[in-house]
View 1 (cartoon, rainbow, N blue to C red):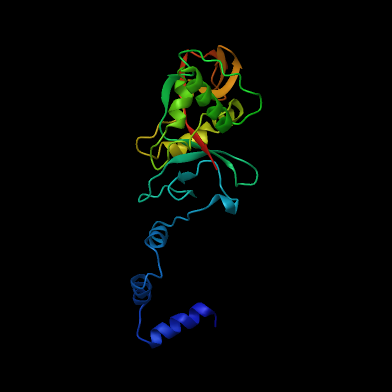
View 2 (cartoon, rainbow, N blue to C red; view 1 turned 90 degrees about the vertical axis):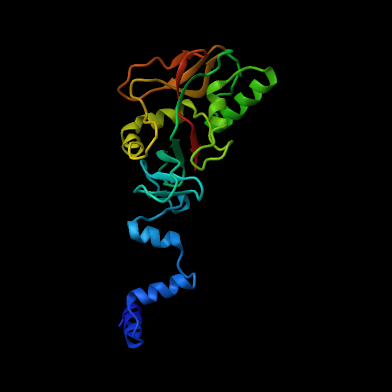
Length: 230
């Protein structure tokens, strides 16, 4: 007889139903509200350390968890748009986009090649403050504070990072369309990245079947999708 059979037999011997046992554990705070909700909805919350995060999963910033199904009682923050082979590291596309210039002042930052979006965004903001210039796309991302995401956590993805999200846009949109008020990725629009090409131009990314010039004047208004890394 396994342990659960012994437990059930003992409960029956004491005249307790399964509901009585669960109610007792709940009363004595042995079971969390979150655990019971997950059990009710048949949803498992995951952490990135487990190494099983997948594209299209929902992300909850407040406790840095992920789920394959949308959980009604939790505040969803974004959707996994890219993940590496380990399943531990990737990018989350956040829910609210804007159409903005990279820099209406055409600020030249002189970014080094090969930096990730978080590093690029920090350098862009620092240069803008120093030179008193506008950098609308990077500023929107760095100040993004919605759906449990704190200001300073999000950034403007690099060209490589945003291109990977665009490659997965069909899966990402399947999840985004389940979230009330979320902005889907637009197949016919270019998306700003934090990567510079020259003093007056920066790189954009677009969906695989969209026709778009990826070297664009910084004054142009393109879509901006803030992301966070995990």
